[in-house]
Image (tube, rainbow over all chains, first blue to last red; front, side):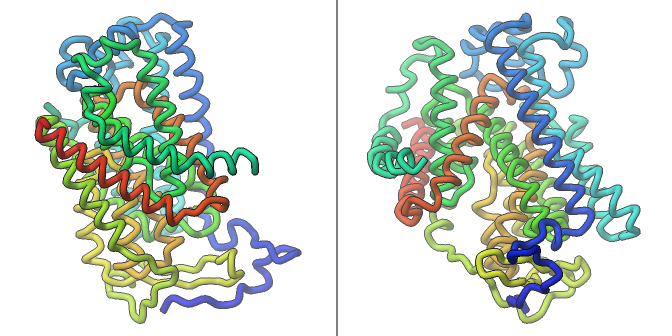
Length: 157
Length: 318
């Protein structure tokens, strides 16, 4: 039954404040640490990438005006017309990786990968702590995201 | 800060009325020609998207809803971008928001991996399926269905209650196997709260459906995750909200890859949406104790209903 009880004294700091992490086990603390690190990296990368994109400090693969003139088209139609980056196609981009739009695109890819990094940590911790049930669930979740990120199941129009 | 909060508080009704008038204005008034961007420089739309996402971030926090559920129907109705890019951006907006909020909630024991991972495993598979189906169907049909879903969300928000500390007398067997129980510290009342979950199989089925809908329409599905955890499974509200964010980050990530591989993620649209929403959410969180959230919540529900009707009409070609 869900209920409320007095907090044990050893979980309280002087003044009654709660120790952060006292109710979070090792896997939660490490997951949070990874998430913190990755989300900060995403924010920094995204900001730098977007500034490089809009200011055109780096050359662009597709000019912004051209993209904007076609953003009313479906993704499939725009893809056929402009060949904008999709999936991991930027890795083989003819203009290389140092293009403003590609750098900005890579920051979005990093955002999509963030959860995968955190799950990798959870899988490792559950394995080391010999928790087979949670190891299996976390590994299953990790593999679902790996499959999604591989593009194997990304059939569209 | 106090002064600015007071100004925002005074301006809020006017902003809300303006928002409602805007919502009822035909989309053609905003984007008369196709391509819509032909009439206005591209940067006006990008700046407009940032400002809109910023306001949405504030309103969403004050109204107690996730930004994603408001973002997709409104942006797809009033901005010239194709629905594909709006859904892609919507998923990444919801993903970014849940990632940013995650670390403190995990450290406090509110976001629970044991509770989140099994549901996310089911939801992420169905969200990938939903995203694939969503990208296969014509945009007009998706817009029509989006209108219906958003109106359904409005009904859920009006009718579903909340329970701070639901009573669960006995765990079901699956809940026991998955160890769906825990303890967290309630800072407000300075008490430990222990909880356990029940009705796990039904909840898993619902998470499958929620994941599919979230992936198909690019919505963060906190509006549905929280009631399932809280009202169905009997998980305390704070744990439900925090764990819902965890599930949302995993499901959103899975579905986002489908959009990424189909070229439906444009940084030009996605990045200002994420930035606006995150900055707005932070300001909204600061304003939260100073404004009447009940009135704002009702207004957000009204905006949601209007944007649902707007999507429905757009889907019908009206």
